Amino acid sequence: MDAILVKGGGPLSGEIPIAGAKNACLTLMPATLLSEEPLTLTNAPRLSDIRTMTQLLQSLGAEITTLQEGRVISMSSHGTINTRAEYDIVRKMRASNLVLGPLLAREGYAEVSLPGGCAIGARPMDIHTDGLAKMGAEIELREGYLYAKAAGGRLKGAVIDFPFASVGATENIMMAATLAKGTTVINNAAREPEIVDLASCLRRMGAQIEGDGTSRITIQGVDRLGAATHPVVADRIELGTYMLAPAICGGEVELLGGRLDLVGAFCEKLDAAGIDVTQTDKGLRVKRRNDRVQAVNVTTEPFPGFPTDLQAQMMALMCTAEGTSVLEERIFENRFMHAPELMRMGAKIEVSGGTATVKGVKRLRGAPVMATDLRASVSLILAGLAAEGDTLVSRVYHLDRGYERVEEKLRACGAQIERVAGE
Ligand code: EPZ
Image (spheres, rainbow, N blue to C red):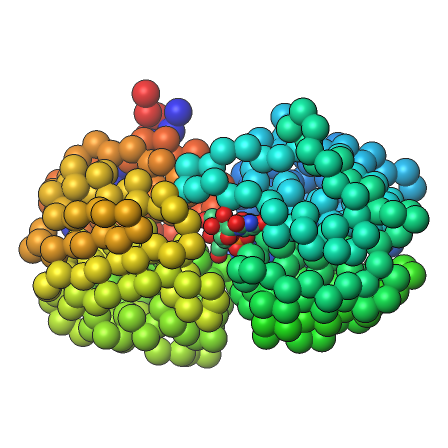
């Protein structure tokens, strides 16, 4: 199993290209099930999660070819579609549950395995299933599978009030509603840029959607959707992660393809911590103002609030800040597993429930540490960049799910980092 070795060191300098968004691509790909016509995605990220989604859709009968080493994904789901998403694939990746809405919309029937446990939280699907039930789906859980059937063979429009602005439930219901009979309104919908990207792709396919990006989305169902080609939006979480590299170890880096509107709340916190972020014609330029950053408090919230997927990386930065910061995780109930690993590197962190208090230290020290989930793994790499000595991060298969060639991108900016054979 691979590991990544980071030799802490000096400032970074250079450019890092930002790839297409994992969390956009994972919801755009199931949209192929909504049409008999081809759907082509460009600017797709090269990640193991995308390969898992490809495997899942192929198991359902979609034809998928990739070009430019996976940068372009061409999909077609004409003809017979298998309506059963097997546990063997779904357990590898939760986002597999995003085929539920499209299958129900297309076939009026679906059998989708529940994903099971996740390191960062329970992550139930009640908001998804309650919404689909409002649209006339009869849903039953049996042997770990959701068996869903659209009454009368076709979903119908409904007004759905979400108790929480769930990203996945918004995506599943929005896709299901495109082919439903009548109008669907989602109140308290999620507003993430990945939702806007999905809506704009569905519109290219002929869907009638309004309000994406706000908390009220209206979808007028149509009888069929057509072909489309759609560029995947830039990955704001990869962007935010690399913005923290020059912040944590000094220097100046330009993130190619970065956009301020994707990372608004995050940039406000960086500014308060002493980090300059400038929009350039190529992307975002990031530079630390002083030798040390200032401690800032952070609370994770749905977009446009501070993203939970950048909380671990922000904690790594706060480990070396001047002063004490308080990080509150409000989205997932178990998302501080990186804290004990950072403490192995000399960080001073106290975790109590959903709150972590971080007392900044002058310097972290390198150590062997273990990745526990995707975002935790990259926070350990960031900490390693600023630490004295060597940091060996094991279980980096977590990392490859969401970051393309992390060591090459950082090495191009002067970091001493390499992939090594682990235990
Ligand atoms: C998406 O997960 C992202 N994944 C996550 O990114 C991200 O952390 C999350 O949104 C929040 O921004 C993908 O897009 C593939 P939610 P999702 O439904 O859709 C609870 C990463 O690192 N909830 O908004 O699963 C749930 O338990 C990953 O790239 C219910 O209670 O997130 C959680 O506490 C990690 N019932 C909260 O809502 C439901 O039916 C947010 O979940 C659905 C969700």
